[in-house]
Image (cartoon, rainbow, N blue to C red):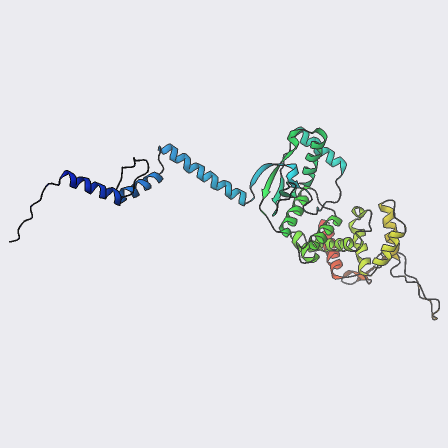
Length: 372
């Protein structure tokens, strides 16, 4: 039988030695006196407890609500739903080439008076520039050019502090093509663009690299338009490309005149048109069109070389009606009306004919017949 070990009560010296060894082997808990110490497991528990949020249920609920609101704010900013009051001098209104050419002063005066009386009811749209400029500009204008210019005019006129800022929706950074589409959509809704403005912005958007070419620019910018309308936009885009720097009154071009001019350009009249416009700068829109029409009317009537013999060529018929069934246009296209046992036929003749023009004509005829 094993002999039991007899336990002896430790002396005061033994207890002192044990306490000193214990203090050396454990870390001191912050906040205690230099001589205090706790076991490692107690230290871990204390650290965990310090990270646990304390307070009443109401305080914890408020913290949770604030965190959710902060998250929603971040999401709104990322989705372009955030509205802010931005200083005018932080916005570049010309960050994009505008589709509008002129701002009618009477319309701008009316807009300024409305803002002065009732404030700005509709915010502008801006996007954050990838690289803020040294002059403090941080945003580029997407839509709301007229509103921005009206508020800026009121600020300059009155020097009132309330016009130093403008209400704006901050859109997320976007690609150039999407920015051009947004601008065109906003202006088409507010006030329909002219044919020349549509063609002009399509060319500029393509030149700035937002689209591969003018064809893609027209198809993307006016995706909801009919095929015939996009064909007209392409015609006016060609006018801007070839004569945009020469025309003094492009806004006065009607659809009919613009299509005739486009046909003349397709027939190779650019050099003659530029020479005519450069020789006698027109005083008004009608004078400008008279110069253009004279060149178009001469396209199918080349001068005869007197050195060559043979029977003289008959001159091209002047534009207008020749009899009841034949119409000659200034663009060199002849329309003849004929009739057989099945109905009435229209025959189109001339070098300026192409598929785009015929598509447009078919759409116009359809519209007339459906109205009837």
